[in-house]
Length: 254
Image 1 (cartoon, rainbow, N blue to C red):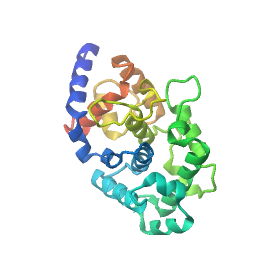
Image 2 (tube, rainbow, N blue to C red):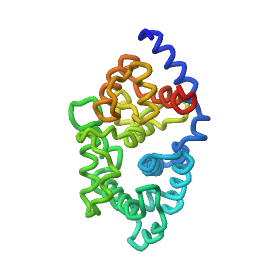
Image 3 (cartoon, helix red, strand yellow):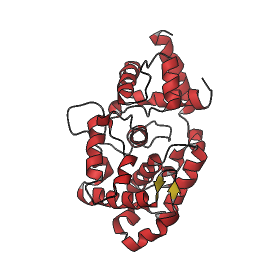
């Protein structure tokens, strides 16, 4: 497919899937339960972190997380005591268990009190135009507080060549303003031109079929290759094509 034809094809798929009814079957519905910025971003972050596996199970367990946070994520995180975290002890989502959840609450409190919140902690602070270093730095900040080693695996590090799919998805939700009410666009200090596609099995396979990606592994090198090609199609909003790649893979078995 020629570049012009590919852009037309993918733009049509973005228009098809980047609509409010996308929310109904997607984990992004969880942060849509909230209106306060901090509640939205905390709910989105925790939901994104457990977003692997069956989507029905992801949504169910993300809802459980919100219940344990008393439907006020920011207030709970800022004001919780260790006693409050006892109620987490039956929580588990695949390899993310109550120990990890308790740690995430403690680390998020640290970020809001000492690092001006998630928006600041994940900002790009160098001259690069991707979140590779920003996510690496965020992981360092996240684990400045005492923690168990096991929890570190739940925050990816792109400098170790991880595709960081879940954090890239979270960043899309927060940074990109799609005008249709799916992505939130609440992080005004960030630039959507710097976003990368959340690369997973579905989007990776579709990208390879469309010759947007040649690398076989779904790692950061593949993310960088996909970035380069998607930015040729739309340099200001490249990650909108996540809707096309995801929709083609999940809904159309492309």
